Length: 295
Image (cartoon, rainbow, N blue to C red; front, side, top):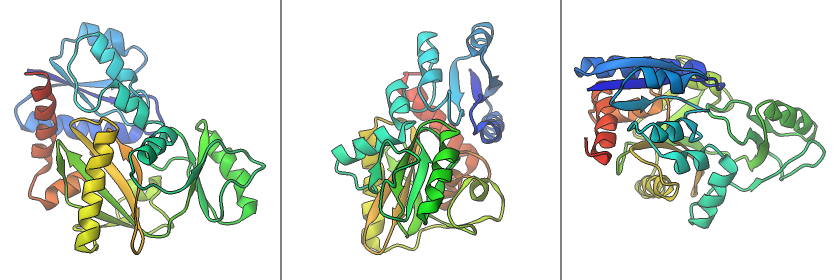
């Protein structure tokens, strides 16, 4: 069986996608699989036509991997693939639509406002200005003073449309989903003001605590909400659900359909906490996809 590991692409998360993809490819080789690494460019359809693969292991963060584009191409070409399908990917890449689905599904999420402009203060201070369709905390600003608003919107607009979200002062936690299993809860303590791009991908910039320092009730509620969010959006195989937890409330922030799989990433750390090594985790994701396709 030949597995094509798709990584790279042209989003702001290209560098991280390459790191994730190469690490996944190495793990698959360690498990005895034949692997073809594919750095995805605009010629991806031609590359896939020329190189026969049995299944695609999608490690494309951001566009075109997390917005349904690559999934649509793979389905058109009849190539099985790991992870969420076209619809779930297209929904999740848009954080505003995601939050609307959360609200309709009874999943608590911070107050938000969309659309926003440079001239109108959208929410009570403090709040976050976020790009609608970016990952890895790219383009996010915490607005604590009205004078910061215009600059924050301008920064987010560099990446497309943006929205405002109420800033919740609490613990940042994340829960990986593997199949129908919620992994151990990871608490993130960034050395910066919040868990931004630098904190996520620079060694020593964030402390991981597993299991998170939460009460039994909050832990159980968080895991249930993680599974509920994963299912409400129609995700498959694996995902990562991000939360903010204050003294008595749990808020779902977003879901990632293709979370990072680097040595500093959350899901491998969570899997390790339950005794699952990196290579086994990678193969488990592959086998979940293969089972769906009857392979």
